[in-house]
Length: 395
Image (tube, rainbow, N blue to C red):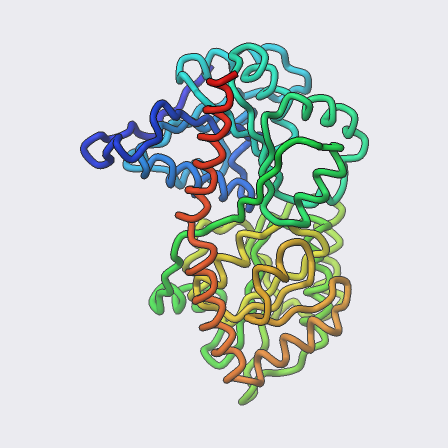
């Protein structure tokens, strides 16, 4: 069993007086993959340690791509169970031992696949509260496992959800009648860099006169990237003869869906104006390179990429799904999902109406800074943890 230590809590840097007394948090998930839910865990863990709260991240499988973002200065302890088979009883045993050594006072599980392990180890073996965080709208593949997850949800001490729509979806899915709190996602400040932005545009061969739309997300059916390809194909040239270019940062694998996307790019004749970048760790540079941000999903919870783009000051076009309308409001352009013509029209407006783009970018940044800062999210989670720990100590 391999253990990875990504730094220890420095008492010289962080005063323990900031930490709720006795609070020690274990964050459990399948893997720190390149995704929005996983990025929430990264920001949350850093925020907890920054407030003097010892924090352990446990990945059921491997550490994942985002584990590389941590350094010794972060003070985050990360361990991986390396479990690759379902119903792995030995993984439950290893998880129990990890939580015992860490002396966790509360376990926060962030996906359904990890929930049975967290419940068996935390609630049954250690008698510690287990908080489940609902991130998305369960787009596909969850119905056949509904009975299993409903059973284990009986042993959750509470649930948090990232948006009202996500809360209602999971309440219905689990037939949950217990406490549920709304904890919206939060992101740190995203600083624009002209130098980094120019380097990305040069790398991609995008001229200064070209208008660059950026999308961020792994290529999965719920992301509806085919709609973005179609919308790009519907657009003509930008002002002063510049091209309108779209770039998607996110993993592209060999699945039938991804193969379809690649074929569609060729069929629509946009091979020179539509780029799949793959996984990119330099998201700040990508936001600096882009002129606007696009989200074309048909299903979302409260996507981190929307909040990051707003925090970076980019004007945003997004589909009216999940928690997006509440987060974006009139500070961006909202379109209906599955309507590439609407998406193309919104993109064209952003290119041609310079004042509109600048106004939306400024308004979005101001709103994200005031309502979706990472500090607000961390404090909300701490309040949940304290409530569950105090309730457990009384009982």
